[in-house]
Amino acid sequence: MNMALIIATIMFCETGHLSGDERLNAKGDFWRGQHHSFGIMQIQPDQVIADVNRVYNTSYSHEDCFSRHKSIEIAKLYLNYWIGRYEKNTGNQATFRDFLMCWNGGCHWYKKTDPVVLGRLNKYANKGEAYVRSINR
Image (cartoon, rainbow, N blue to C red; front, top):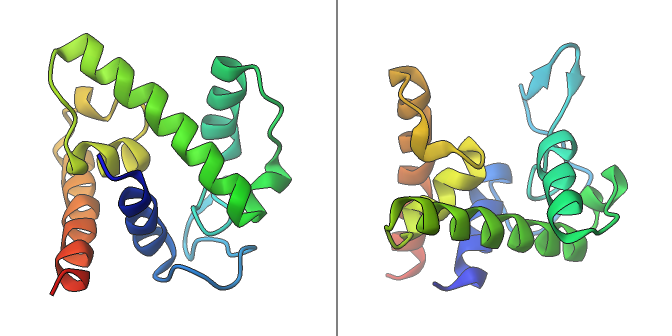
């Protein structure tokens, strides 16, 4: 799988661009009175960074969300681990769409059944696939 394309697509889906203000917060991505996704990858420290630090015994912090380089490292580690678990648990080979849905829906995206949640995941993946089609023209 082309991880560079996956990362670029996630950046586009999350922030609408591939460069710029790395301190960006998601518009409307407010929960309990605070923003909870940060930087160009819109990383959620309480979930993504906590998982990466637990699995890889690293020490990434909330501030690392605001570094383009570290955000990409964190995303690659998270996706590699959880996509690997998905493939092992299901016997399915992950698709490009699975990578997008894992990032947007969390590590157990494939177990979700709520139609509203599935609609959001599909909308996100459709946006990512449309982005890739637009750059391949």
